[in-house]
Length: 288
Image (cartoon, rainbow, N blue to C red; front, side):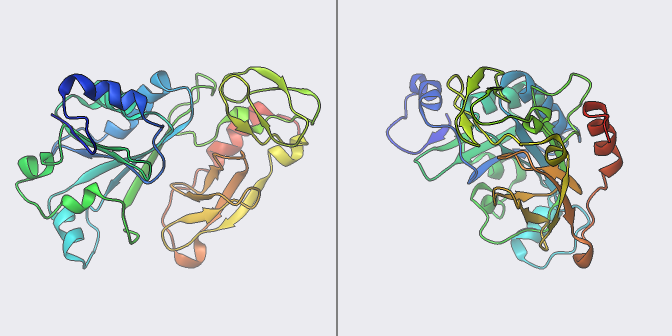
């Protein structure tokens, strides 16, 4: 029986409650994997979410394998060879649970989802870690992290609107690079509904997505250099949203700005995907 904070204890109310509540925020949507889970679990989850959820989703596989850490709780996670998958998504918990079961297998993970609007779900239950790993020293994994952790990360991206040949390693959403002018019809990046907005931003009347279209092709395809902190986080200069970089080139999920993370002064070891992104962008916009 899953643990749900509140007055919903009957099994028949569980799925109803998951669908009723608001979409999950960014506070914590985490999947803790069973020992021996295939290393491609995060990628398979991203592939499944690309089918199950219409909006872009980032799926990050994290571990502490071979990391030098001092804090006792981190040592416990490293020694247990813990692997977690963090999900940045607007999907409700029931969608994430269903996708995780399909991609990873029921009983092979613990899904923890909580936010500041009274959503608190642990599937199958909060005691799963203790049963599987035979310790309570890992319970901190179920709570939002107060201090940054030096995870080893691999990121995958579920972007349904991307061309079919763009796989889950592509961190950009092509439709966010569209050019549109206020007062002219524009196509929603998510659902492709045409609508007219009288300002620089516009909210789709069909799916509710707020788009930040660019005013020129040159601006849409330009890369912005973004300084990264010690944990590979940087801030979009266009809309100020902070993002975690799992590769050098990423895209702001709010406004579509292409960003080139600069972590050289901190010696951040993140994959250099610039050649891949340049090739994909050239296919979209072959003009110099």
